[in-house]
Length: 158
Image (cartoon, rainbow, N blue to C red; front, side, top):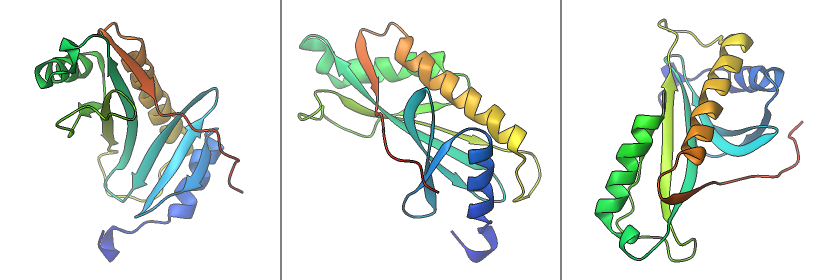
């Protein structure tokens, strides 16, 4: 990210806290956001152009034939039809043997329509609600896969 694209990350993190989220620093300009009682971890990156949300979920197939790439692609298509704001992708060519499923990334960018770095708490609260609704819909959708959010239970950053 260039110097021109930098914003006051501490200010935006405080707005996420004001919106009821737990915030933890992460790497490379990202920070982790969790809102109870739905403790799915979302990585957030903000710049003057957009606020980006990323969440990883595991898609665990049932049955041997569900482990094929064509079933994964069918699942991604179905997931993208369910979501309202998220784009769902998977870059893995095979199932993660430790987790027994595909690591699926949901991502969305929220744009205000103007270049700014002073995002309002009400807008952030609305974006978090839309985001968590999409993640919940992904988990609840009947896909033939067990969809599991990567959950976090960490102490709050002060």
